[in-house]
Amino acid sequence: MHSLHELQTTFAAAILERDLFAIESFVCGDDGQDRLTVYVGNVYHNLREALRDVYPVVERLVGKPFFEHAADRYIRENPSQCGDIQRFGHTFPTFLAGYPPAASLRYLADTATLEWLVHEVFHAADHAPLALSELASLAGADCATLRFRLHPACRLLASPFPVSKIWQLNQPEANSDDTIDASAGGDLLLIRRVGFAIGIQSLAPAEFAMLKALHEYQTVDDAYEIALQEDPAFALGECIERRIRDSVIVGFEL
Image (spheres, rainbow, N blue to C red):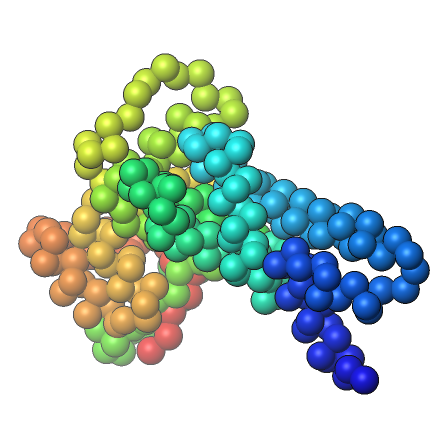
């Protein structure tokens, strides 16, 4: 007699492996194989569609047959670990980076990463803006020890490829006939949501370095030092004020 946990584990593994003979004895009725085949088809279809919703640019770049073959292998090798289907597929970029048929498409994994971050930002929590007047309460405090918090709907991405242009030229409304040279240079990007709109902004190296350090919860002083390595003329105060005003920075702690 199998325990419920053993039954569920065996059933899930058999569905993902499409090994219906392993669980045929668990199903009542003479048409068990047929019903299991339908179930397998529905599981793969639903998870494949979840990936397709998040990664439309990847599918457009590689074509539907390639995408579905990659998706099916990903589904089999990376079973969902969460009941929220919106979280499924977060490791798809890493999978593509090691997927042999995609080896010649070196930009594909980073393009997928950008798509996942767009998806993640869209579903991220909102946050009230930070009023500049709140900083007035810090008079006399050691501001170098401040740790600023970025908006929950902000992400940063560094890529050696022009993934922003790849993403833009593969949107449904894009009408450009431009071609993309994948070796033309990389991107330092801020991906953020404003209302229900997603914006992708290119950043200068110093600002990217500073925001990344702040995102990693480093102090203002440490983040500034990192930014200065990229640009000795980096204007910290102007950048902080601008990013508070546009709600990229929404909080702080001493």
